[in-house]
Image 1 (tube, one colour):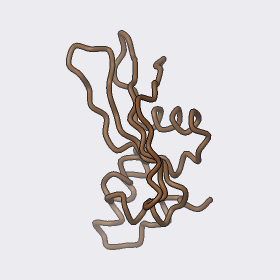
Image 2 (tube, one colour):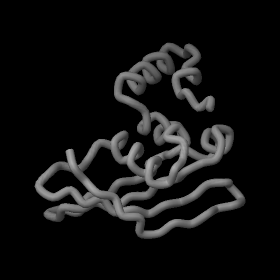
Image 3 (cartoon, rainbow, N blue to C red):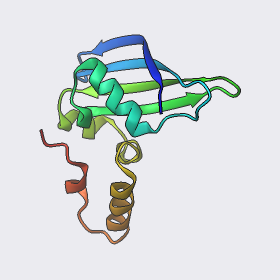
Image 4 (tube, rainbow, N blue to C red):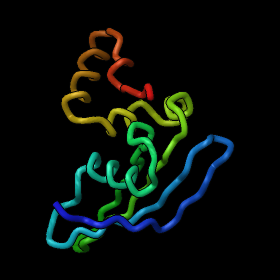
Length: 119
């Protein structure tokens, strides 16, 4: 799948210690790319750790070949876990890890080791 990412806006939030990025994805004649693929590409563009890059939102425009999204790049796992909601953190993981976390959470067993936020 070929797509390009253009950074529209970038803000440094020193209070939370993260970069907030607004981006645009161009994907002509293809579906919206996977969240994990977008995450990898943004982390590579910004030279950041992929584990600390969170895709908050992807908004698809009907009939268009582009999407607009928001991403947060954190410096450490502690801030990420505090400020990002649980469902957003899970959404940024591979699908097999997601299902495992939800199974463990339902059984009230520990699941935090599956997030892999350690450097």
